[in-house]
Amino acid sequence: MSSPSAPHGEWVEASDSDDLPEALHGMRAYVPRPLPSDLIVPTETHRVLAMAEYTLGELNESTRRLPHGEMFALCTRLREAQNTAQLAGMSLDLSETWLTELLLARAAGDSAQQAVLRRHPVGRVILAFEHGTARVAGGAVVDADLLGEINQRLTDTVTGPLESGLRTRQGWLRGRSPQQVPILTTPPGAMLHSAFAQWSTWVRAPHPLPRIGKIAMGHLNLALLDPFPDTGAYLTSICSSLEMVRSKLLRRHVLPLSSWLDEHAGEYHDRIRAVVDGGPIEQWIDFFARGVRTQAHAQLRLIEELDGLRVALLERVNGSPTVQRVVAGLMTAPVTSNRALEAMYGMADRTATQVSRKLVDHGVLENIGGKSYNKIFVCRQVLDVYALQSPQAPESDRAVFSPPAN
Image (cartoon, rainbow, N blue to C red; front, side):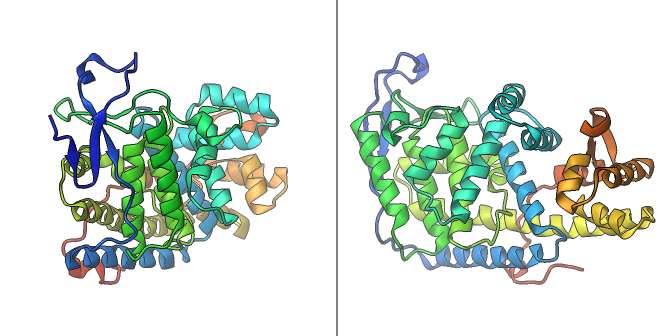
């Protein structure tokens, strides 16, 4: 069993919860210490952080080339919703996530929206991301209050004081494999309330660490606090993604960090375990920053692949400028409907029907459901590009500063 104290926190008696698995009985819980106002890290860590920020700058510039930058950001948020749901054990693909977004967009009234959410639980993750994105765009800080609002949308709970939504039972971080020992998170009650308030104060204050370093520290602390019931995997991912936009590392939400975290869930758990066992905090920061950098490179490759596919599809369809605009837009909105085309391009319903029919005839779109006005279409070629994307680190650090291949 771990020692009762560690450099970054302390081990305490766990809460006596009826639903705690028998295998976890007798284990102690970990309470992270308040985050430091300053932190000295090695030069190597600063170098890794600088390379990660440089790559995010490249990603910012590359998104300018896209015909619909806002739609690419929406597509990224939907990928985040999909991957975040997978982190919590929900299995679904990107087309289902897009379909849920379209159904939510056309749901009129709370009852219609609730019907969609009952059939498609990922809809709650989508609504949570969209709420957070809108609040950050309006100048909100990604603190305890905003996470409380997001948690309410994830769990469909009524609005109330932040404290009323905090976890009241012992929580734990699950490993990806049976060999990985779970980590019991901060016990509920006074310890959790105090530690979460301290976290919220810390994230609002300036910090001498580079921005990615601060986000990495906040992410780790939030994961170990696990403040809300059954939403830990969702919230830590949403929080870090929103903070990258709020801190102006990214102009828009165009980095699906949860995709990388999902692929490296085993190492993610091991890195957190290393910290609670007293390991160097800079190793966690390095791990997080390298993940950001790797995922940013994956996004740069994705944009290049989408650009090549756009050219190929335009050559296949010899259509009007309107048809060409829609084809180009499919790179960032591969699941659509006639109603969505009307809203996106300001076209009449008759025009939207004619365009979608032409693209179906040319094998660009496929009708996957619905009749008449409610038809849903997918561009399989674009979905395949997104699905086959796998983050890969550059071959060397020098490659980080090299321009992308033409």
